[in-house]
Structure formats: structure tokens, C-alpha cells
Image (cartoon, rainbow, N blue to C red; front, side, top):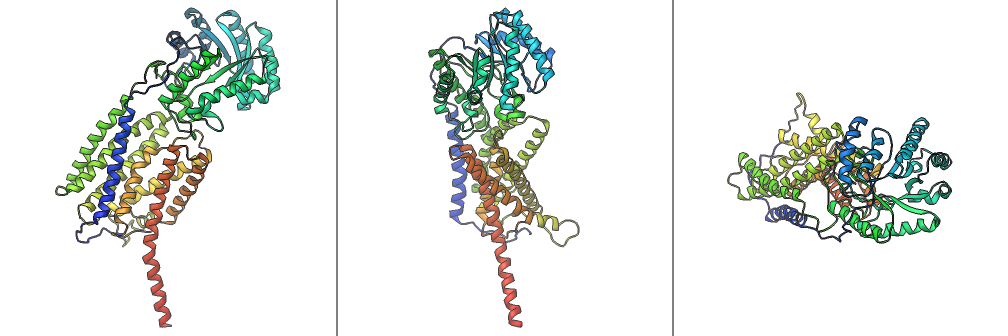
Length: 567
């Protein structure tokens, strides 16, 4: 596949209009989103008083801390939390957390002392012995002991084994004792109620098997609480965990966001205080290390961020997200940069071409800020940073190259090049007589890399997408660039048929995406957007391949007819 040397010819006006409308429409939508996001949000106020309780783990730098660092943080953390809460719930008495009762007593905080129970018998024995000792030493401050957290959910103990551990703790202290788990496990194991003083349930609308959207989240909590209360009429029901994430992937109708987190917290607290329902919010601080187990969303359930800054107030409007204002400045700067690149590539006399690059740059600048936010919140390890940064750079290179090709096309110049297939690129290596333009090779390699990335993520989402994000910010620009280039030049330039490997990858993306979209339902707008982009990319690949194969089929048919005539 070589660069066309055709004479300059103005493209059809209707094609120019559609390409321009697509870019201007996208820029307009982004502008509207920025304007809407930068407006304060009005929400119902919660009571102007301290909250009941919050889950506490002192981990502010993205991973679990050594015991000595934990002890150093406990005092400053609890001083902060004592201004907003009456109680904290812990999950272990190891790794420095055994200092919590001592510091809490000095600050007037109550403690729900958690003992971490796992499948390790020796560790369980140590937790129980130390927990009983702390509860007896700090009686009055430690108001209850919660023996195990979601142990049945993790299948690390049987109900019978848990009963033995609960009875051991009850025999060693006068402090009320409970066990905490997702509400369904309490309904499945009623015998546990016999060995606890109160029932501790977790109600997390976002994490339900059938996720509950924010509009119905409080109703869900109310219904579940009533259901468990009916099942255990002689026990006090304590909501041990409830909350809403501020960052992460949507699950059906349940969408993480700062506004939704603030709304759920305010509405739930008002409901719980009015009905005198004991509760604990998850959680005090964001825990970025949880992203390894639960995906991005696992790290962002806190009422404070990982640096100890409050994420929202309980009264008054939620302020505008000032970080999104940066998107507008980045968009304007990128628009100028794209126009300058256009001038560098010889488009000085093409006003329409420079306008196209300006609008394309505006979109790219906005997306750049969104990309950075995604990279910052989603990446957990240096390997993930490396992979996503490479993917981002690949996408940017593809977007810039396709935009430059479109700009030259709009200016009436011969099409610079179309992407070469992997087979053609390989065939052109070394001393092969097949020559492929460098621009075409680069576009082909970038397209192949984009396809590989899409195949990997699509398979992962279809196989186990519960905690995986949709990297829309990383794929939107290259796919948009390739789609517009395909539309603009569909009948105006030679095309190159896909290699078998590319066809297999494209088919994998399509099948995985369709399965994933079917499982997510239409309520998840972000999932549907991801699916639409994947289907669009596969469609342009197949369309280009079909167009390239048609001349070959006709040539083969003509050749066959000629041979028959000779026979």
C-alpha cells in the first residue's frame, strides 16, 4: 500500500459538513458538561450534629501501613474524627490498631472493637486474646466487640466455627458481642443470633447482586432493615456498614460520584437519626489500597479523602468541582497547539483545515484532563501505570495522525495515507519489493495496538467485570479519529485488507462486548458508551476490510472467467 499521488481535489461538501458537525457537536457536548459540572448542587441537609459512627483504618498513602506508622497516625486521625463522629469502628487489633481504644478514651470517642477472623487459627486466637484484654481494660470506651467481618461471605469459617469463637469472646468479657456480615448471610444463618447480643448487618446498595440506583438506595436500606428486624424481633439490629462510593465504575443503575455519595449520606443519616437506628458509615477515609481487591471503586468510600480532607459537607449546596474548569483551559491550549501543528505540516492556506484541527484540539485538551483523572484514580501498581500511559500515548498518536490526515483531505490535498494491515507491514520489512509509506505503517501499527488493548479489556470485562473500569477516556479519541478517517475516505483511497490476526481480534472484541452489554442493561450509560465505541471500531475495521476485498474478488472472478473462455 503506497501513498496516493492523485491530483488535489476538493472532497464532497456533504462529507465535510458531516465531519465538521461531528467535531463541533462533540465540542458542544463537552462544553455543556463542563458548564453543568461547575454549578453548585442542591441536596437535602442532614442534621447539624455529630454522626454516629464510621469505619476507621489509618491508611493514607495508598497501601497498608506498618504498625509503628499506624500508631503515629491514630492520634491525629481520631482527633479529626472526634469533631464529626461519636464513635469509630475498627476491624482488627493488630498492626498498631490496638492504640485506638486508648486514644479514643482521651478524646471521648466510643469504639466498636473489631477482631479480624480468617481461616488462620493461630491468628484468630491472638486477635481474640488481645481483643478481650483491650475491651476489659478500656471498658466504657469499647462499647462492643465485633468478632469477624464478612467471614461467611469469604467462606473462611463455617457458621458452627464462628459460634465457637463468639462464645469464647462472650465468656471473656462483659462487653456486648456481635458478628458483622452482608444482610443475606444473617437471614441464611439464624442460629448465629443465639450467640450475639445484637445483629450487625451490612447494607450497600451499590454492591448488591442487583445494584440499586441512587434514587432508590434509601428505600432499599429501609426495606432490608425492616426485613431483618422482622426476622430477629428479639435482637437489636445494627447497620454495621452502609455508604456510597465517590469514584469508580457504574454497576447498572448504581453510579459512583461525589454528588451521589453526598446525597446518600445525607438522606441516610436523616432517616437513621429520625428513626433512632444505630448505624456505622463506611468509611472514614478513602482506602486506595483496596483497589487491588475491588477495583477503583474500592478505594473511594470515605467521607474524607486519603489526605484527610472532607469530601463534602452535610449541610448546604455541594460546591462546583473546580477541577473541571481546568478542562476548558486545557481544551483551549490544545486547540491552539493543534492549529500550530497544522501550520507546521503545510496547511497555512487551508482555513477549513485549521478550523478542523482547532476543534479537534479543543476536544483533545478536554479529554486529556479526563484521562489524567482516570490514570490517577484507577492505577494501583507501577505496571498498571506503565500500561495505561503507553495506551494513552498510543491513542494520542493515533488521534493526531488521523486528524492531520483529515485536515489535508479537507484542504483538498491527496490523502496522506490509510492504515496498513499487520500483514502488509510485516511483508514490507527487509529487502521486500513491497513498499509502504511510513505514515501508513505508523497508522497501521497504532490501529493494531488499539485493537489489542480493546481485545484485552473486552475479554476482562466479559469474564469478570464486577470491579473493572471502562477506560473510555483512553479509547475515545483514537476510535473517533479512525472512524472519521474511514468515513471521509471510504471511496476515495486504496484500502488494505485486514490480516487474519486482526480479524480474529476484531471478532473477539465484538463478541465480548455484545455479551458484556447484554449483562449490564441499558441503564448503565457508561457501559453502553464503552460498548458503542467498541462496536464502532470493529464496524469500521470490517467495513474497510470488505471494501478492500471486493476488488480482489472481482479480479479473481474475471481471471476465472477468462481461463474458462480459453478452455
